[in-house]
Amino acid sequence: MLKEFRDFVAKGEVIMFAVGFIMGLAFSALVTSLVEHLIMPIISIPFGQPDFSELTLEINGSLIAYGSFLTALTVFLLTAVGVFFFIVKPYNIWTTRRGEEEVTGPSELEVLTEIRDTLRSRQD
Image 1 (cartoon, one colour):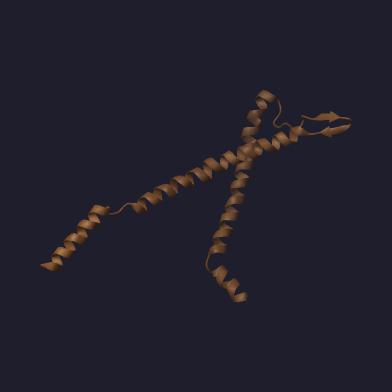
Image 2 (cartoon, helix red, strand yellow; image 1 turned 180 degrees about the horizontal axis):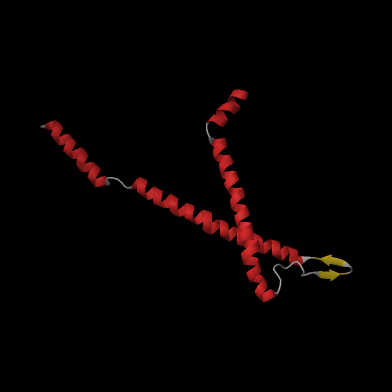
């Protein structure tokens, strides 16, 4: 069992996972800062406050803090947009370009012509 674990770690998959996790945490902190310190203050311009936590509803003595939910929802949506535009979209563009470069090579006609010429030279 220990040998299997050592082999698993030696493959580099754990290291790549750890690097991805650490980068994800760093990016999360970056997006959180962007949302909390730049975007939410801009949202506060028309609403008068940087979040919606003051929005509450009281029914029969129970306080429903729906504003906190709206703030969390806004942060989540803005984070999702940030992840999409700064990670997913560039990655998709990069993999598409990389795939096109790998596919680029001799065309089918060029390969067939080369095979034909090779066969002709063997017959002579």
